[in-house]
Length: 97
Image 1 (cartoon, rainbow, N blue to C red):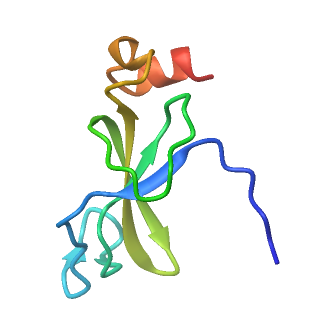
Image 2 (cartoon, rainbow, N blue to C red; image 1 turned 90 degrees about the vertical axis):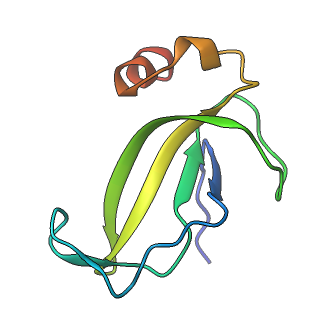
Image 3 (tube, rainbow, N blue to C red; image 1 turned 180 degrees about the vertical axis):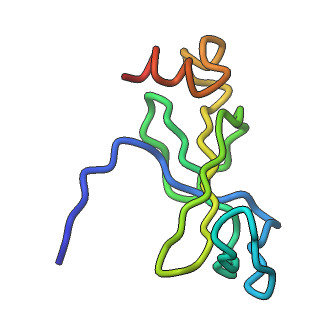
């Protein structure tokens, strides 16, 4: 079994869906992975499984996972102490090196 040391919270945006029948020509023509859009929350607190957060989106990453398009939204929880300091990818690099 593999174990990963993940330094962020991983979740999803409810009521979203990546369409597996739609090719995205901006990303190598990949089709959606038939899952909700993923969220990587980069704040300082470790969150509980199933916790619902209000977040500020900071970036979107289009990843190809086993040939399928898998969008990731990088976000920070609005209750995080650094939330007011982080508004985009450049701020992420600055405050979360």
